[in-house]
Length: 310
Image 1 (spheres, rainbow, N blue to C red):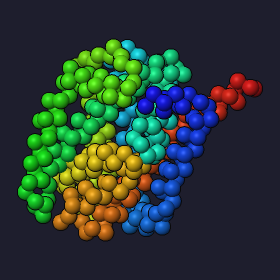
Image 2: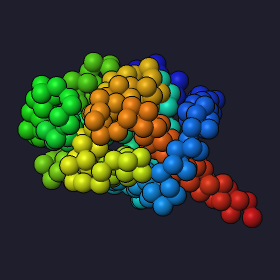
Image 3: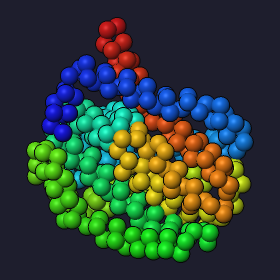
Image 4: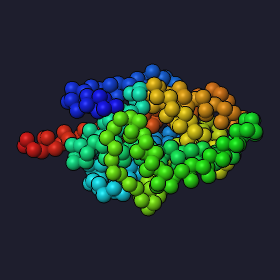
């Protein structure tokens, strides 16, 4: 990890990261372009626009969770600086390895006066909070799992109280410091308050619900009944699928792993072919949101250069 962080300081590596991330993200969209067009037409443009909007809001809510963690360690940044760091770093999800978004975020934060260790620590803490909130939501979804699934699936409902208990700041802080030591990163004096973790968890829950709503709307366009129960299954199922994708470190943004979870989750509610379309379109819309929002800071910088040279 230290070697990776060292390489990331090179301007050549930074540009290489950006080009590689954009290329892999574009590949994820273009390789299935015909299927994507058919899916958009199939669900109807009103639902497609609504689902796309939710994808953008999901990314922004995730950013607010990180900003809550930053504020908790008294490292507040202007919203625009936070956006430049977080939105650009999210492209790292599309590079296999599972660490590049943290590496990119730490380097960009260093340019704005926050040490790499503290920035990496806050990004890792945000990820921990997201994993636990997502795990709790997946547990709720398991409790409402379709009857076509084995009964033991509902046992995953026990994940909800366990994940909520693990959100205790002392436990999270210990987990963070242990992770830093395992990665051979410089340890920090980071300590988090209950109020700060609660704010981060609140924004994380908002993000998860927005993502679940995106999946749900696409599902409705494909024939999923529009009920509270199916929304719960969609939100919990997506959270579980995302966590499985996170564990698949060598698959860019969890490509392929989500299908393994969502196909059985929606069995009995949608045909397998419809679930594949749902997963494909959902992933593409999140990719479009990531790439588009990452482009905003680039436009800001370009305008700043043009303004300073005029």
